[in-house]
Image (cartoon, rainbow, N blue to C red; front, side):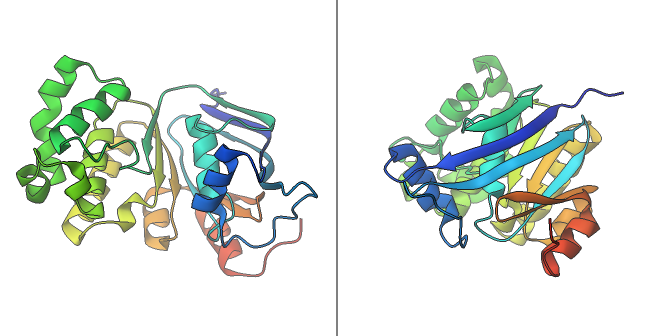
Length: 251
């Protein structure tokens, strides 16, 4: 039996009002998520009691309404968040195609940010040099023309294109994708689709957060439906989508 590349057991994370880290994450990702059954200390659990395994090469769609913990789950897998209960074991390096412009410094140029972010994700100077032209060409003509301009002058779409171009060059076995393909023009989305399909053919493991049914059915064979912080359906993509669109199952 193939050993899981990602294993979650009773996974839960608690956000507490008054903790700087948790307030920031709550404001950024959880507003509008409905009732979280807050405790007397102002805390709530955006995710709780999640148990699942993902084996190498699987393509898994994470489905649910805004504010139901999908992005929080990706952050737990990426190691950005540490669980407050249970465990998450990740057996392989992660290429995070999420918050693609979060690591950029507005005062640095696109060229400098490319080198910085690629280095932070483990690419050597030689690898960056070898891949530099490919990264820039993928990002597109607008980014190429502004490569020596401070990133603070970039549009959000330009930042996403540059970020995707960098991260998609990583050889890490696990891909985390959070609504990346919803940003940018049609030409860029098609390039993203081609890249995703190539990476899947190479045997990468994909965890995709999206509201786009076409993207989910195109790339994923398995779906996790998260409702109010709980894993409600773990089955086919269609079963997860049906649960998302229909009456919420009783658990």
